[in-house]
Amino acid sequence: MADLSGASPLADHPVAKFGPIFLLAGAITVVLTDAVAGTALSMARLDIMGGTHASADELAKLDYGYTAAKLVAFVLSPWLAGAFTLYRSVMIAAIAMTAACYGAAYTEDINLIFALRLLQGFSGGVLLVGTQALLFRIFPPRQQPLVQAFYAIGSVVAPATLAPYMQGWLIDQVDWSLIFLCSVPFGIVGIAMLAMSPQAEDVASSRVKFDPFGLALFSTAAFTLTFVLNQGNRWDWFNDQAIVIATTVGLTALALQILRQIYSPSSATLFNFKLFRNGNFDFGVAASLAAGFALLGSSYAIPSFAVSVLKMTPTAAGSLLLPSTLFFVGSLFLTAFIIQKLKLPGIVTVPFGILGLMLAMWLLSGSSSGSGIPDMTPAILIRGAALGFLFLSITLVTMMSLDKSVLIFGIALFNIGRQMGGLAGISFLQTFIEDQTAYNRAVLASHIMPGRQEVIERIGALARVLTNHGMEAGLAMKSAGSLIGKQVALQSTTIAFDTAFFAITLFFFGAAPCLVLWKIVLGRILPPQQAK
Image (cartoon, rainbow, N blue to C red; front, side, top):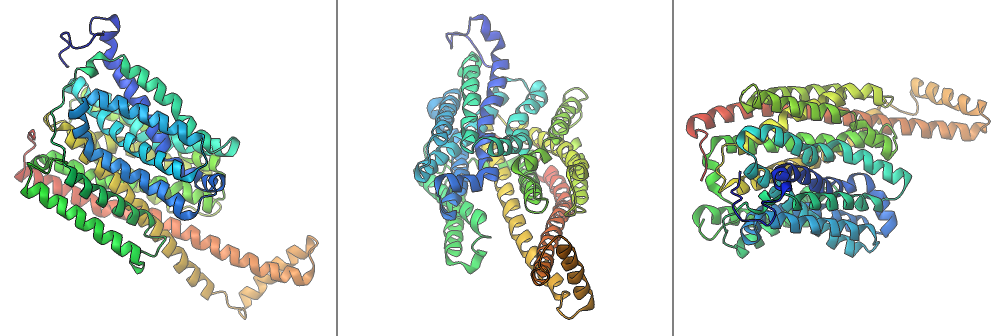
């Protein structure tokens, strides 16, 4: 715990003894603003386009601009903590996020919304790194499993399960602008709770030398590579010159920054590569990439399947993931109990998480165009429990062995890993589903030849049904052919999504042994020691 001797005017106030509790509650509440704002476009994309008269390119900027700004905020958080203190940087970010969400709810100017999305992304990045760093600094190690389980409700559970349902309901019942407006109460309440934690004010952070050249390089890499992953599928990847140029520029900028970090660490201060001398941290970053791939990838694929194949409304699509919330939260606290009370190592629940995700995605791969919420619920529940087993363990394994002087650098890199893994997962699944849909349509269409007896009989049967419902015979024949075309398209898309779900299972089938081997190798050459 931090030393409170005369550092804060609230230190002697009766509320001070509850400061850590207010800190935890405030941290959970303020990161909910990022959970809501960060997933806004997953449900409200078309509604925002209609409300702001934005083009597809303008809307895309709202998406990758937000993510890139968040990545920049991750790496800049250590410098901000040293310049303003960790507590003040969190409070400034919370105020900025709340104001940006309020502003976005009351404007239809797409350029202003883009500027506010950049502010939301940057503020959200500072909040995620800063609040988690405060929790690790304030609470003792023995309490971290339970503390981080609570914190994960706001940082991981909410964007994966709660936010999509809330957003879908708001779109169906009210208006898309309320998605941003509903973040404001979370921000105000969170700021008030953080203000009642004098312990947080006393957390000292080492000053970090500002690295303007490194910031320019990383910002370039973040915006260009996020653009590539977000828009690559739309522009047919490397068949488009803009994607090729952005990829080249982004990778070059990132490579230059990595070389600066290796050969000139005194001037390149965005990262601290000494962290990679810690075997647990190396394993955690690799695992966060895989976990991000699974979390954000499946969070994209499942609602997309519900909307495009099952023709659900946004509310119904959001409700598909909602039942898994209790299983997600339950497995988080079960993991915390196993680690905190039974004194078992954090890594013990990771296999349950991986196997659970594989089982859930395998079950979803058997979905059809006639599936409903009851059919998909068992897989969704298993997925929720698996994510809880996975994320808390990885967080604790990664962070608990880090010295407090480099902890904030570790949290920043860990979040970058999860974010980039998620971007890669969504990008892969978008491309995979589109390619598989086109391939399946070609295969199915090749069997529907005009002269085939089965096709003639099927068209005739459909035409008779339409004629019996009052349609003119000639029009009925044309409509029957059109219906068969729609059925082919629907089945092509259904098979593509099923194959995508199974692809996630295969991803972990390959990734799990690699992670285990990586852990074993790191345990021999880099024992888990505190990085300083």
